[in-house]
Image (cartoon, rainbow, N blue to C red; front, top):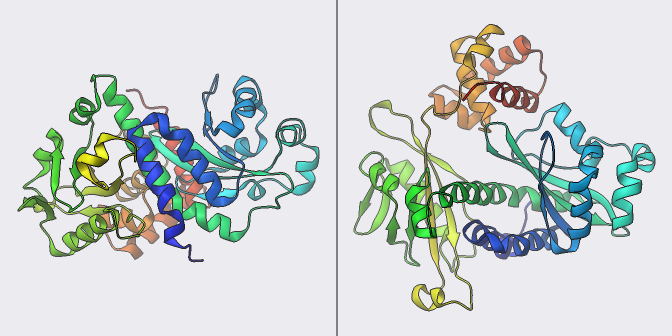
Length: 375
């Protein structure tokens, strides 16, 4: 089902603005809510132990306070999602795991959600790091009917941008702990960051991005290019979509290949839009874009020895770990340099050996195993 891009542009812009300016997250959550006809949106860690620290739209502040105090322990739909396995990027409503008859007698719905005017939840799950999952849930009000397939399609269109904005926000938060200001944070962030002006020309580049230039990426006459023609075509299209004035949703992330078989970079392009009431708009016009460049070297804690003990071959282990980090099967195949059909064959073998039936169950298993690995 096609979602009109123009209707989502404001929401997408607010998401990336919130990634850079944390005080704008309530504004971004409100925009998500309006996009799907919800009364509010909340962000809640999935499957934590101990207390929960969550964020919500202003309209849900009272409900969020009560949820953090006690109701998170009685959140039946989230508990079921954790049990069944969650694939980062997945979008769905609570009716996927709850029957209407169960809802009519479940205390979480009747004693918590209903008094706050909430009838239904629809969420997407974001992977912030090994073993760290966050549910971004929109809450439908009583008397407004259940979410439609069109509403699900809208949240699915927003999901990759929600994930990208939260990943950037988390990385900047970590970097800010070691820096005094935003520019200092960009210097320390654990990914290459390039900011572009409204014409797509380089404005700034952090040290890691400068190190990456000359190996798969380069700057020619002030413009970032990929070395390979096919990669560069994707890069230029993504930059064009993120710059102001094109009324296009920013593109999904893609791989940029490097020489001599080195692991590729994963590149995403996010729009940068200044606030209307700031000097930044006078200085930089309608904004520009930001390139986020990640190395795909195997820096994550490996769970290979656990998977080997379960009977997986080295090729199957590499695929399972890639999928466990949230990669789609086709992307994982490209990253590992194998054919898609070969990846499908490996996946069927993995399912048989681990006694799982869905990719979401595999992701959940790898995530849990990752939590067992010592730093």
